[in-house]
Length: 126
Image (cartoon, one colour):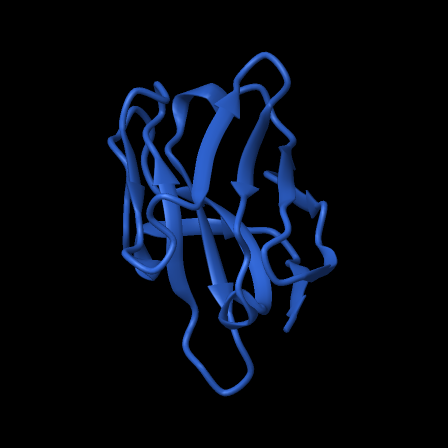
């Protein structure tokens, strides 16, 4: 059984920074691509950033490119999302997820992930 636990969310003013962490259980974390998604009230869950199993390739949604950075530490079974220059429109529940199938490049679509964390709230005030 895989468990993903996010942390690091909170309330921050516009222009501020937060770093989200996602700790994964299981010894095979390093073999899987990972992703961060977010969902605002009344909206669909959309990909924010994704990273390949090696960490060598990454993807960012246009709305966060240049402001957010995804990274992973396979020794700690953890994936991170560094969020800088936060905007009110970044307010959402943020979820980390593990991609289906091992040894894959990053994945961008909701249905390409099979394990999800419980989510962490990020609120950016103006």
